[in-house]
Amino acid sequence: MRAALKRLVADLLGGNEMKFCGRAHRRVRGLLGRAILVAAACLFAAQFVAQNAWAGETTQKVVNKAPNGLAQTPPMGWNSWNKFACNVDEKTVRAAADAMVTSGMKDAGYEYVVVDDCWQGPRDANGFITANPVKFSSGIKALSDYVHSKGLKFGIYSDAGRETCDGFSGSQGHEYQDAMTYARWGVDYLKYDWCETGSRNGEEAYAVMADALRSTGRPIVFSMCEWGVSKPWLWARNVGNLWRTTGDIRDSFDKWDPKNQFVHPLLEILDQNEPLWSFAGPGHWNDPDMLEVGNGGMTTAEYRAHFSLWAMMAAPLMAGNDISNMDESARSILTNKDVIAVDQDQLGVQGHRVAKDGDKEIWMKPLAGGGRAVLLFNRGATPVNITVDNDDLGYASTMRARVRDLWTHKEVGNWKGSYSATVEPHGVVMLRLNP
Ligand code: GLA
Image (tube, rainbow, N blue to C red):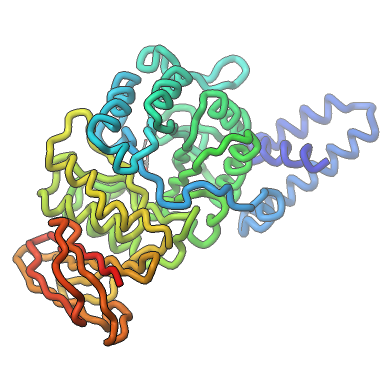
């Protein structure tokens, strides 16, 4: 009965409730017992929809909300969108997998190779999703096998609506079928977007796909991409492993695109994601969107700041550049193991801003073992001197620690209650204090 209800609810959430109830009614005509079951299910479903229209409470009862145990540290990998958008094909993805190994990114901890929107072809006669036959002519299973052969994991993209943001078939009404397909293809990570969702309730829509993924029995990291619309940090802890908190990132430190208000410069994204720090933790992360490092719109200092700030915020580190053709500057930023260790710290606490004086900011992230990552951040266009002290870090005056500079990779002495440094425009000094 529970399973039948669940299946019905899945159909229903795809907007197929009337069709289902009509179809089911025809099928069970004359069979009283089954008719009662269907009537009860349709009644339950109607209530489900009614309740979810305003609260999503019923979702909590229907869907298994135990954590899936994945992403105990923020996921790291590469995603095709920021650089290639819809110009993605299997050659590009294979090249990214190759480069992840040869560039040293795999050694530095990067793991997931994720194909974003535009991989899809039509659905077949039975409603199963297929890959674009020209761009992905070898098929997704072969691509996933290739990525796995490199010791990496494979990710894919879909959408909770009828269509994806670029107009391909979304998963609404096909959630269980798509999850099954992904599992068959060996998918390890699903990014699930929010276009063309009409009046769907975010909480129920994501809970259904979470349940569909779980029911495949394959461990699949669930990356929710509803841009913070329904405040996922309040309810998605055991639904997704990460949730976008903002619209899309733009490859600019502080400039808006007047023609596209959905893309935001780095500083905007930062200020939206920072206050949410208390909602992140092992298995469930705030996602301020993928990295722009290496895409050409920012200076080296700005890209260093971008990478450092994402690490301070325990953000997923998904490279978004052409990693098979990147220069040494981008490569060395993306593979800075000292900074990555801050992002991946086992304590899993998102760092936040602890002091601000105009363009001068101090950020702190508590680390396992009592250490602290400290970021001195200059938002302004001229060099500034920034001083951090015990009070900023919540340290007692007796605190002793060694201090390491995470961009010069040098030990810079012992902590004496404060530390001062000159910080370049739009730049950072990033430290690690080890008691
Ligand atoms: C949305 C998402 C992006 C990307 C595109 C694909 O804008 O936020 O990250 O996935 O859709 O169409």
